[in-house]
Image (tube, rainbow, N blue to C red; front, side, top):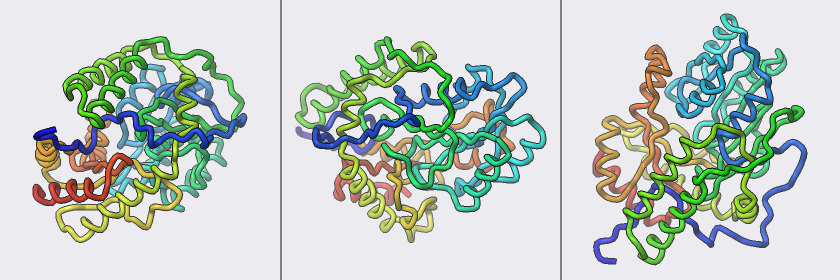
Length: 359
């Protein structure tokens, strides 16, 4: 197609190369709950913990505000603890909150799919010994079975961050009290799956238009935000597709792309790399996060070349106080470079060449 430039980033589309009927990722056990996504997972955890009116949940000051909204909508008292520019958790900040509030649980994030330090893991294990519940957000890593570094009393994920399929696993050893016995009846799935199919036809066969699938994704997002706030179990079709995902192929491509970008950028003085390639172990990362000045201007320039880099995350001072300076710094400086299974080394070369041109 004349003038066509392959997009890097943006919403996922269906790719049959990801699927194999010979693969079965799910190994059913009593400690796993299968839900339709991350928001259902958080709501399930809230209900299952049976939080009292005087109890607080501690949240990291650097997070997706959709998480905050779920707690607020469920009338849960929250307080924030500090996270530094290296995305390391400030244990002292957590302890101050524990002194000031009746803390039921601490919620933490495995940022971009990377595990925390051994000191942080020991700290959380000590909190568990004090009967404080630990909730581990492992949304930014792709997994089907528990990772060695998981330590949460509750651990959950969200597949649509990595592949064009909705679903979530919640891991817990607690007895199950929350109900999740029905599927979503909104139009969201119809819209989002139609959008994914239209994007596949456009990307693979140049059928249709870019504007067509973008409008469908926008409608799907609005439907997702406006749907009933409930706990929905995973759709049977989604679970079947997820079970057949070739996770090893996805892992290899993502790690190769991560290492390529790392080696191209590691000596650049204008770019701060948060996670080194030495941390690529049992995890499958979401993307390649960097810290740069003039982030928003550079991001717009990349978009002009069909490179779409997401931001994780824009935090709002009305939710997260400005006193959490490092978190607000991260919010205005982090750029996530796509590394996913849709892209070859040539795509990564184009991405990095464009980035370096604008830095």
